[in-house]
Amino acid sequence: MRISGGGFPAEYLLPVSSEKDVGLTPTSPLQPAPAENLGFCELGSYRIGVPPGPGWEFRIDDAPLRRVVSDGESFFEWEPGFYAGEVTAELVSASGRTIERYLLDVSPSKAKLGRELFRSMINEIREACPSLLFGEEPAQDQLGHEGDEEKLIVKFARLRGHAEEMFRAFEAVSERPIRSLRSRREEMAIRSVRRADQTTVLNVLRSPAFGLLTGASPTPAALGARLDVPQVEQHLDGDANRCLTRMLELVRQRCREMRARMGQLVECERSEETRTALEPRWPARRAFLDDTLRRCDEALHRLPFAEVTHATISAAGLNGVAANPDYARAHGLAWRILRPGVGGELGEDRMWISPTWEVFESWCYVRLVKGLQRLFPDVRWRETKRPLNITVDYAMEGEGPDGRIILLFQPRFPRGDTSSSPVRSVSREMRPDLVVLFERPDNRRFLVFDAKYSQSASAVLQQMDTAHLYHDALRWGERRCEISLLLVPAAEGSPWLREHAFQDSEGVGVVAMEPGSPGLLPARIEELLATSFP
Image 1 (cartoon, rainbow, N blue to C red):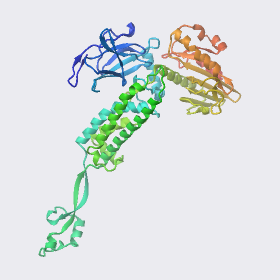
Image 2 (cartoon, helix red, strand yellow; image 1 turned 90 degrees about the vertical axis):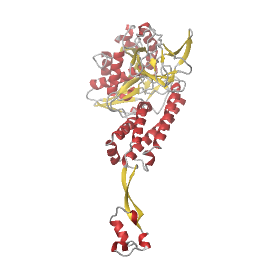
Image 3 (cartoon, rainbow, N blue to C red; image 1 turned 135 degrees about the vertical axis):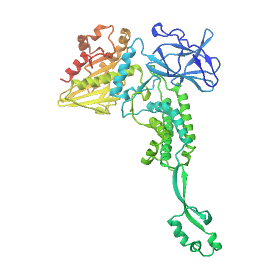
Image 4 (cartoon, rainbow, N blue to C red; image 1 turned 180 degrees about the horizontal axis):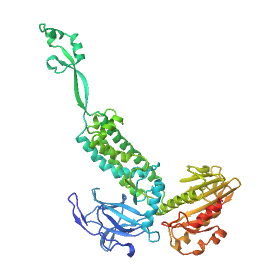
């Protein structure tokens, strides 16, 4: 692979040490972006060669990789975490300059689903609720459907993706700014006057210069008289420049807000084995935000923005922006950074997505929403924030003629007796993935589902302890859950856990929620839902 730029040429291969079936040869070269480098796998282990010279860094999503020496050779070590998707990598010199960027394609673990099925899950979630995909893992995905929610990571991704182009567009505006005309009045010596209007004539009638108009002999007072005449001048304080100045100020304000908020998140971060830490990525991101703030200030001190007296967005300003290609491009890029929600054409934005196991949880929630709506067509469904005063990430509530159904995603079951929530745990606080509450005037029932993105028999057996824990500890008032099931992407081994008789007698078990299956829900889940709310 050849790296060029800044007078630095080098050729070297990047050896990869991984499982034999990953698909990479022992010395696979990385290709610079926009080329994609395929064959990486989550939870794999890789070594990336170090160029000659000191001070090099290889960053994955802003986090520098650890440098090791093995058999006299120096490498960067990388172990992708619990995520799959496209990862952005950078080779950074000792001076801090990015020499080359790479796109690394990370597939799900071999113990999980294939890449195509994982992609189908992402597409289904994106169509139903894009905000469920927002995360902070290095892997990225293209988003482009409407949504109301906006998270910090979405704002940062948009800023990171469009800032460089935006500054180049604002530089083009500075080189060819729109100048406006405005009139003013000025007192000038009579010999310098070239243009006069009605106001000038009326003022002359009251001045010593009037005698010159009647043919009288000129007097020193008449010759020295100064006339009030109209003048037209060019200026940069026009509507279009005011509009762009305001957009630049809003981008600067967003940078400040993100810098403060992201710093707070890093300070409050808790270590989790299944999530990538934010702290290693914070120095590079903080440097990027600081540099963006500096460039915003520099742009605001350049013409035409420095001459704007009142930065505001108006209809006249937007019309002026739309009529000039340079202004329209600068405004459009600033708007891509500032716009709320998740909208626009597919592929317009690239967002960090959640870990693979969290994507599977979100997909199970989407499938349950669709399944409940199909099973109970007479129920009126709506999204709700705090159903029954229960703290949740997302929820759907349905009102029917015979009662109510509530689907909870990541509900909080607080410890012990509490008056603030109708649900509780008899031991420690718990947050199951999915809970379905059925409420009739004379009866209450609830089911618990915990999504586990793994299909190996040994892993499923190890994770069954959560099903037992939820079955024994969770309460809705004084009501215990009817059944607590693990949802896995494929059924392998432990057939007794999938038997209906075992699940009915023990209250726990396993059900396969298979992406790519023709039905919305497995027959067992549909049976449990239908019998719980006949």
